[in-house]
Length: 134
Image (cartoon, rainbow, N blue to C red):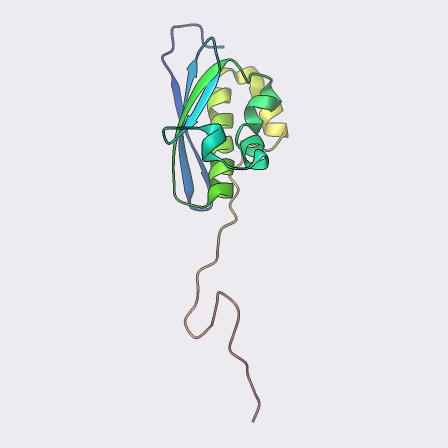
């Protein structure tokens, strides 16, 4: 655990085209805001909120930090996963002892899956127009 007085820890989390800049500030009362809104109003479903804050629940530190995040790009699902990735990274910077738990849950690995680009002559990335022999 870092003993000197920390103002905040800032990390970046990514998923598909979503990029989350996460700022973790030690605080007495936990709060989380994303792009200036409360997490409850930014992510409409309970599932997305759960995914976004999963790193905190795995580390059992849900009410110890004030979290501020700026997220750009992607859809809501990939934004929630990008936030989870950034949170996991900042928790590890805060306390190296949490690394084992967070890594075992798979939150430190950036998910490399992304949409494949469309190639010319095809309708989508791999879908070709109907072919006939004659």
